[in-house]
Image 1 (cartoon, rainbow, N blue to C red):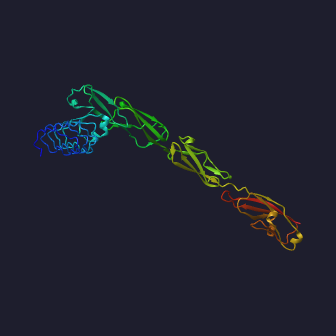
Image 2: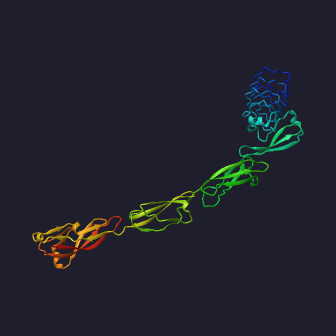
Image 3: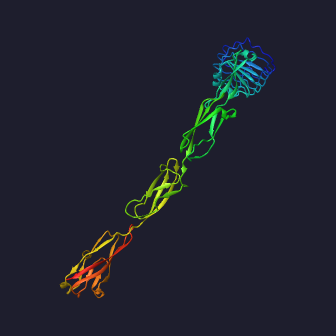
Amino acid sequence: LCSSLTSLDVSGFDTSKVTKMDYMFSGCSSLTSLDVSGFDTSKVTKMDYMFDGCRNLSSLDISGFDMSNVTDISFICNGCSSLETVFLPNTINNIQENSFAGCNSLNDVYFTGSKEEWDAIKGNDLLPNNTTVYYNSSADSSTCNHNNEAITVKATPDKDGYINEKCSICGAEHISLIIGKPTVVIEEGTIIYDGAEKKPSVKVTDTQQGDIGAENYDVEYSNNVNAGTAAVKVVFKGDRFEGSKELTFKITPASISSKTVVLAASAYTYDGSAKKPAVTVNGLKTSDYTVAYANNTNAGTATVTIAGKGNYTGTVEKTFTISRANNPLTVKAKKPSVKYSKLSKKKQKIKAKKAFTVSEAQGKVTYKLVSVKKAKFKKYFKVSKSGKITVKKGLKKGTYKLKVNVTAAGNSNYLAGTKDVTVKVKVK
């Protein structure tokens, strides 16, 4: 066991053919320093737990290692609780979970490669908090009296930015501040069309420091009046942010259900043509709605449906009435006759078409004898409902005037109609 060793000289080790160095110094808890700069690690594939438990080491330099073939460095410095500084080569393939577990004192990591190379191995994700990583560094960087120049790489909505400090003496670089990428959220909920520009407020934050002040961006709106899809564009500016982020939001059509709808007329009389009263919707243009008519020809209750379109939605239904028209019944009396020679023997019948000319009647036509001039002759005449006139036997020669009521019953579109006509029946 090496737990009591405070120092160890490995300068004479030939490691040119070594393929595994896992657990090599594991448990050497008393070592205060260790120089492995002479190791040839070109064939090494495993370094897991290599310095596990070396809790008295304050500095470790493996920047000269060729780690291009190493696939496992898990727990390489596990439990190195006094480790403050470590030097890493750019040949390292990745930093694994728990590679530096328990290294709570680790302040500085000096990496011989660039920031891009470091980002590629996801190093920052697996180091203790507050550890500073120096890029393009060497062993001398740890003792350099740095003269740093700050360079800001601005954050964009797609990636974080950072402030990079580069030493003009040793060339080492490190990130002194991460500038989180900005995010934009539209804060308002449902937005309803009302004819005015809509400018919902936006909340702009970054993933590191939180809220971003309004002096760091401008807000532009477009297509933000009419119902549909509107856009808000946040254009970043200033020392720490650049680029832009565009979001869309919906402007919901307004409902017309609360609008006052007026019909130009609410009552018509049937005439066989479709009725289409003009529609006025308070506060709206005719281009804001459509009008549809139903049951608007025949007598009864017609319907008008007004449906919003474009900036408006919903429907309003109105009704109007179409009354039945007067019956256009016309009746003209003819001058029928019967021969006395026949009448003296038996009663005679006159067909309706011989006595009446009826036109334009709507509904069933019926007839009724009202009177006969000189009432004493009425007993000789009979008029059936169908209009047939019966002249009874015994009537003398002469002309007789019959007052007949003709009625048309009407139908769904016409009222009942009636006419009185005088039919002159001649017995000759």
